[in-house]
Image (cartoon, rainbow, N blue to C red; front, top):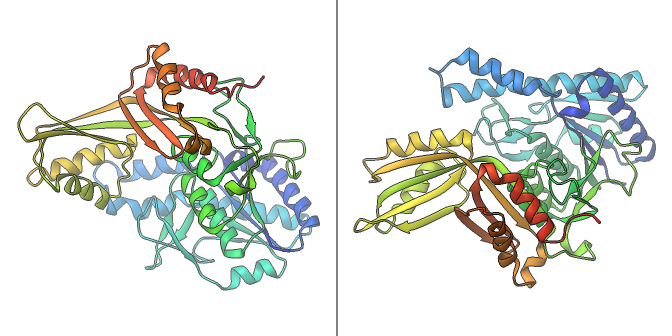
Length: 417
């Protein structure tokens, strides 16, 4: 049998009582698995935020960028180290053979983009042999090391990516991600009480939902799972029978799903900032210059709209990024003003992105009309629109976020009966 990878988020390991419960779940899995087990853990709930605060306060406003990021990773990665050691001890107390593994011990090699590093390889060696030999490997998620042997972190939610990477490296049967929800829902149940749990969802749909604001899985973990064909099962560690085969949501290949909905879910993101670059000199190559500078600063850009400005040979460039990256983006562009001519930069942080997602959109018409009609009926103005084969996203005033989500969920017939 192939190994099983189990991943537990911060709420699942929030204290010693929860860690002991996780140890019970791992022990149950060990009784039925002959292929080995790797367990990936996050920091205890709230611990990463505490560590981020410590690092930020220690550095103060004078230390930023490369002078801050590498030591920031050293500090914030320590939360997962504590959890992995505690869980290994809890498993040993139950008579199981277990040990903790940190990112540098495996080793999990990443690039040097500290704070949001990408995994490049898990070197074949002692880790894989330990799992195949029957030892339960308890892996500190969220962390790795660079080629020059510095600790790196994968960004918030990075333990999901760690888990999928480990599953791919081990050739695991699947990756079970335990969290505080019992699966993937058609939208956030806290906003829409009639949201329904999805039994199976395609990698592509889950990738869009994760990238567009659904908090169940990290975007890169889904991308990695799709690229390596790793099935992911999302389930709750708080459920009565959390490991049962018919629980949770299975993220898998589209071909494994019998009935495909036109729209599978509604996602939203409040972590958005709209940046308007006004009066840009409009000539070939200007967009390349703008986004090259932003890319060099590791700033992710999402929605992009270019429109003619009032002046001759002038354009307005509008794009979105995360709130955290918005100030850096402004600083980068202002620093490049001699090369990129523009009149002004305007930042709006009072925006949200709302999206409809579904593989069935490829073969059905009228999806956009339904969306625009539903928002119009509620008096919600659309600022920016972006589309792909299986999603439509709109940028709206953040005060209308919940109203938009409820209206679209009903408009597409997703409400539970």
